[in-house]
Image 1 (cartoon, helix red, strand yellow):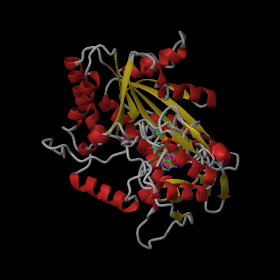
Image 2: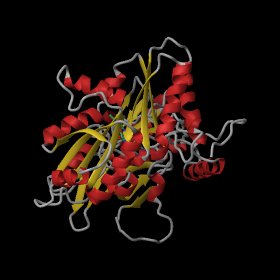
Image 3: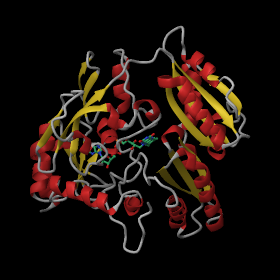
Image 4: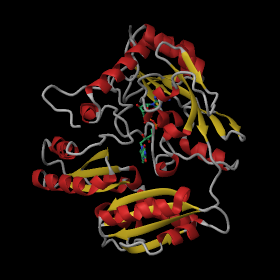
Length: 458
Ligand SMILES: Cc1cc2nc3c(=O)[nH]c(=O)nc-3n(C[C@H](O)[C@H](O)[C@H](O)COP(=O)(O)OP(=O)(O)OC[C@H]3O[C@@H](n4cnc5c(N)ncnc54)[C@H](O)[C@@H]3O)c2cc1C
């Protein structure tokens, strides 16, 4: 089958203007305008065994949309309608291509909120969030995307439409099939619609930036704030010194950062208020009272002031631009293991690649550390050395994950076995083979078993 033939089949389904050549990634991009068009496109591609990659907002961080040399990218750009809001059940029905930020805007104008939020909100789509089971800044309160999806519609590889959009709280009639698609990175079907769970917005919010000397102190602050703030706690993020210093100085542009950069660790916590009697600021100030180990603090309750604090936490692009090459990692472990794990990675890095510069930050309460490791490209196998330092050190701990939030994509496939047993990987591939026997959906996202000779870490 030639590329012209594929183009003409797709054009017959979606119209000539919605199929176009693509200089980067898949050779053709098709933009269906409805679930039925997605279904017809997939049925046709499946019939001819043409591989296809789902394209959302392209903000994923593990190469899940880089299907180089492949044939078709199916973009959800035109699946962009917000269908309905059920205020009684607090449910929102949206198309998969709707941007996360648009969901926030739409529901907040109507007196609701959606709990999933993170830095890529302006570009990423609900379908992409579902496909990657995105986490973000308020997992401590709302959970990952999985906890915020009450239903979905997906098109299988052969074009069948699987729909579970009722959004019932209780429905124990066999398998909860929607869960299969959440976190499946486009390998089991293309998500076309979602039913999102909403909550009522907070009365107000406040954020506090805390400086600390040790990780033990950070964990003590974390457990105390969790206990004292209860459900008011929205976020609990951590930044190691080099990350805080680099990003806060870049943002301050010569002015003073909100706290001195002389401390080893910084926590950014956010809480919400209940009413005038218990505002977010009251709750945070009361919760912080008398906690040992806090060296310095800055409280923000105005929106602008809070945004300035969060710009530091979300400012990882300042690290990206600071080195010729930067490798990013997203590992997960028990918070009590951070301290020795990070020390070991830093020591191994300094022994094996002296010009590597690690920046560390993450979601403290979720046991999720982001490493960004910059280097100057002068050592040919620098990437391999860095990966070895991060992942082989991880293998000394349990439980751990090589991808806490971002998925496997292309980039983590060689390391999946470090977090999943051979049996788990076999079952994942069996489910995939059942739903997509011709293997057309995102074939570059591979669930590879442990290479011979390497031990499973657990
Ligand atoms: C600045 C920044 C901050 C981020 N912060 C976080 C964070 O805090 N927490 C977090 O979890 N992640 C974070 N991410 C990564 C996160 O995975 C993505 O931003 C987001 O969830 C992906 O959505 P997307 O629409 O851009 O998907 P894409 O990048 O387009 O796609 C991602 C994967 O999903 C598949 N896919 C896309 N749409 C569909 C669909 N409709 N059906 C089936 N498969 C589909 C793709 O094929 C691909 O494999 C961040 C990214 C950036 C750039």
